[in-house]
Image (cartoon, rainbow, N blue to C red; front, side):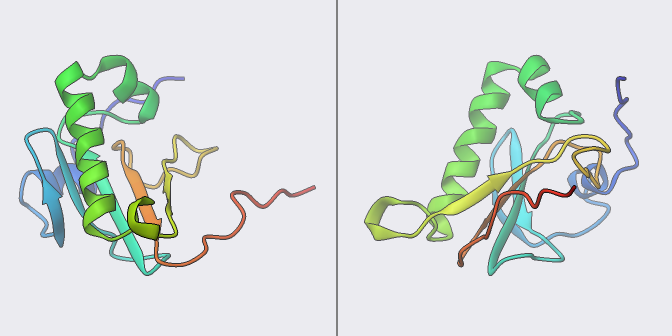
Length: 127
């Protein structure tokens, strides 16, 4: 099942400047901003500026420059927020969700960078 990109999603509207965000960092290919409902002391979303629905869509279809720019911005955010492992920092979690089973809320590829505390188990398994 393929999902078409929806130009009305909130991240597309943020990229067009229709909705404000608390920008953390930006480059030619990606934008990083604070989550409006943070789940950790540091919770930053990084989104590509291109129209990609999910990680697999981005990885398969983005240009090399877009992929490199996105990941370099993620690294910049990790350092700027004091989450990197260099200098004795305790680390962070980077997570993305895709589709209904992944509980993706916004149909625009995005990576959550979360830290500032122990994040707990990766997944709670149910019977």
